[in-house]
Image 1 (spheres, rainbow, N blue to C red):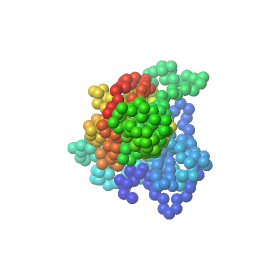
Image 2: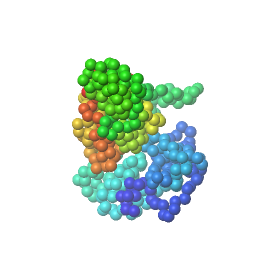
Image 3: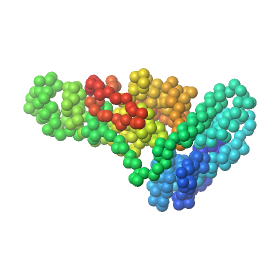
Image 4: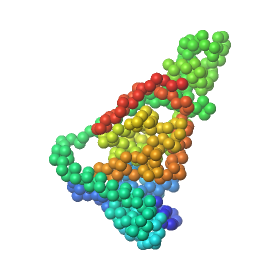
Length: 425
């Protein structure tokens, strides 16, 4: 395995031959002293090999013979041990750094930059700064090294300022006093099943529909309400035949009639293709685990955009988060999702490295969370292509769903989202 591959995988050893199942009990996380946080480089990290071929690294939260929970990008993720092939501890960052540095030549700038970036991602800022400074001594005009050095120095400065603010705050501001009861997490409002169904109806592809159902009483009411329209059969036989038509035909008829008051009488028992792509390629792999993590847009300190980060596989989470993204606007009125040019969507651009984005994500830091890190490496990344594919799969022209939803308001407030008139469907 080459150095670059090692840096990307963040592990040193690949399983040779059948990989044994390692008991999780050997890797219980060590508790830090009371009132003291551990830097990432000193926490118990593990690599979990799953039977489906995935290899995931994260901070071990807890484990037992039945399940293991690790924190990935700030989001606790639980796996059944029946699905786990192997669990192995990850050496401390400092130890891995020494191993990696020993196999990189001093003049191999590309690999040294990868190493510095790898250290930065693991919050080993001093080591990262040492490496990038060394690169600039040998190559003062290296643009990538200059940019990385600025990012690392900004991270260190922002963290120092955040820690100073915390130290200067009084005991009440710091929350040093122990509450009599643990604070209760506020309820995150979600869409109702009927609202979710209505959004599904608007996104159904008539050429590739999911499972649909409609009862005959709905068809009879539709015929009665639009009896004068040319698309409605006039004969008793024709109307009886209409009741035997498949649900997708009835839905298409409703679309042609613009019979919006009947849309929610079509029950979408499956999932429109576009939302399958959103769930599998966007929501599950990176939106919830990174953007909606508690340290980013998944908590009360979320700035102007707050997403639901629990029950990530539930329909109410998927469709609620989508509607929030769909209706959210930047300060200048730009929507997060650009349906005309999906690759230019701020939602995707803000997931890229800041120096490669037309909408750079703001730098954010707290005393316990590192500054923002990119979710997608570049526009050539598979995640970027899959996200563009999802946006392209959404219905055109874009409807504006007749769904009233008031998103939660973080500490700093969130702009009111519009409830616009209904679109062409």
